[in-house]
Image (cartoon, rainbow, N blue to C red; front, side):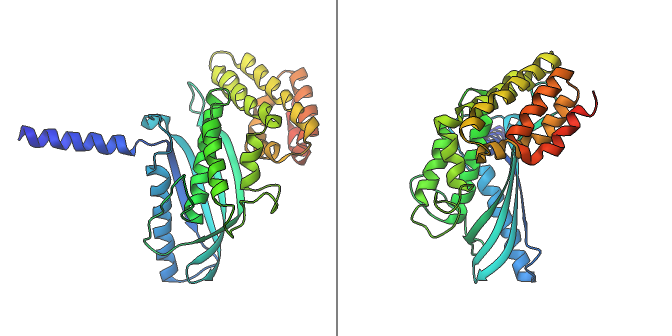
Length: 301
């Protein structure tokens, strides 16, 4: 009896440990333009396969406790079935980071990838190898797993995400001979190739420094010093002018503010008058697409 209990506890511990991977990823697959009972069943199984792939794959060598997992959401919107098992889709990727000693989650990524095409046969496993291309489906989701992790690590230590940006770049390299869109530099200046390429370029080092300073030195100290934390966030945003002066309206800057624009408005709406003037002036220059939104910061002087 004692031996059986020991085996049960050992198996339970092993299951909990094996499931405590890096990501806490919610997955939703929708296909409003494709009808049929069989299709719905296939998409339900695809959703389950993606969920298991993202949450059960060991993406790093680090040990994560359940509360340390990185929260993220994936919405795969299948728009077209081009042949028996070939689909076109868009993918919405969101990830966030819990702020120290708070219940607040700060959005790190909010991006829509419109160049999704993949093959899927019901019940086929999603298999991935960093050393070779196995399928576009596994490459896409592995790529975004590494990007999500890279952003999270960058927010906790200076350029801490470098190994995972590099792994995402390997995935891109493995796809250079494929026919699918989204992987090659000549196709667009706003695709998977350029996200990781830009983040590893020295020009965009201030962006990655900003990720650390803004979150770790700014938001993480607000529980004890809200004014000081906000001041750090202001300085980090002002530092992005270095990038803007060299690469105006760059893709990484757009990615950053797609995730941060609402948070920045909320943060500085409660700031000091001089902080408001500085941040609004800078934001309207480096992120003019959201200029009207940033005007809300100075509406309450």
